[in-house]
Amino acid sequence: MRPRTYIFAVAIEDYQFKPIQPVVYAEQDLQGFVGAWEKMGVDPADCVSLLSDQATLAGIRSSLHGLLAKVGPEDRFVLFYAGHGALIGGVSVLTAFDTQIETAQKSVVPLIELLNLIREVNCDSVLLFIDASHNSVSSPSGLETQVGLETQLENHFPCDELKDFCKESASRFAFVSCKLNEVSHPSRTLDHGIWTHCLIQAILGNAKEAVGKDGRVTTTALQGYLLAEVPRILRVTIAGAKKQTPVMYGSKAKECVVVDLASSAGTTQLTVSASNPIIESCLTGEVRGRVRELGGYSKPKSPLGNHNDWERDFVEKAGAAEVTTLATEIFEQLREVFRYKRKDLSFTNVASTASIKGPDFDVNLSLSQDPEDADLYLLTTEVRSFRNPTVIDDPNFLAIFTKYCRRVVFELETNLDLESKIDDIEEIDTLAKHLDYDPECTEFTLRLPSSGIVIYASGNQMVFSLDSVGDLRLLLGNTQKAFAQLAGDSINLGLRSNR
Image 1 (cartoon, helix red, strand yellow):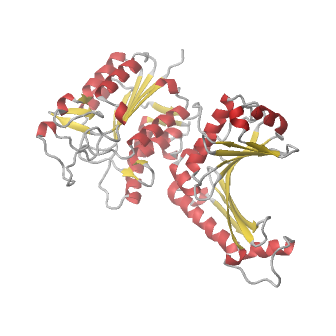
Image 2: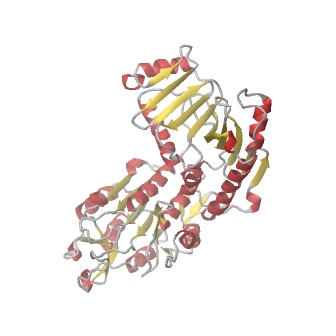
Image 3: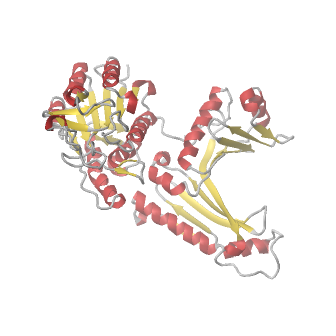
């Protein structure tokens, strides 16, 4: 039987005892961490996640016992914790949702207790990821509450027990978000804790510095990446922030593979399985505006309105500067957030078109006359040719292109059999009432209220968009949900990956 990976994840963002401060983005960190492993092929049935009020003292203990009972000697066990750590009576502890300051010694989980439970399993490989150093207790005035040395939650988390645990086996590793007496920092820009954000990027294969030539992320490479990237992000996102130095415990002589990207399955793809191959997936969006507001506009001899070659050329010349400005803006953003070098990017700008070709994807921009209203222009942004499909999970990618992209477009190898798709949808009452199509069945539009997705199909294209304001993260996630819903309703969209 093939070895399995089991994941036990705890995130406590809000505590029952309110003087314990919230851990900002803890739940989002857990969801991103577990989601990354699942995209790399870990079975969701092998993952246990406890969020805030689920992570009571009893809940943590019982859930951990239950999961460890499934772990075999050849399997791998992964633990993730985001919450407050503490030193109580000289013992490192992890807090639970129902931790009480007055009875802290009885309402926390000693780290050594968790480690002993893992020791009993004696599994082949153990990876521990602990983010437990946050500002923890405050009074209404914002000052740290003093409740006695032995019961005060402090913003540091000593890890002597982790050191001893990892020394016992060359296949045990523990990663901690920062050194003793440092604080683990969240980032509003990333919507994650900085350390966990970097972990997620490495697991997904988005961090080139963490990936070896063989496509593997090893413990040593991961720690090297965290040591460099966490302080870098801290400097550029949080003004005046203190140091945060990630720590790893475990053998430096023997590397272990954290993720094998070459063999991992399940990364987020703009594809689903079935019969008609997708030859290209892209993200696209347009901005409409009045031609007379373009930087290069000068009053024409006659009003626009004929959609002829002269008018199209006039609009494109008037908008050339806007294309250059936008292309340059995107180019600079890509250099900054992805740290691309000069030789990584190719920039071409001719008249009202521009193209940026990079290692992971291409960006194309164009400005043209609106085919429906001659007095308007369309400025189109298109992201395609995904050479690294996992990049669409990167918060940096989402932050850049959520402003420009409103649709996911699938271009298929052959035309869709629209009549049969319409027939299938009309057999399901809950979907049929949200379906529109023309009498000749050359196109259809299907709205899915549960996900807010609107699907438009015509010829060899399917277009997925949101029925509300643009949010690229939401669009991509809900597109996947739409596929899952339609598959569950036995609707075959006629798509499969060409990978």
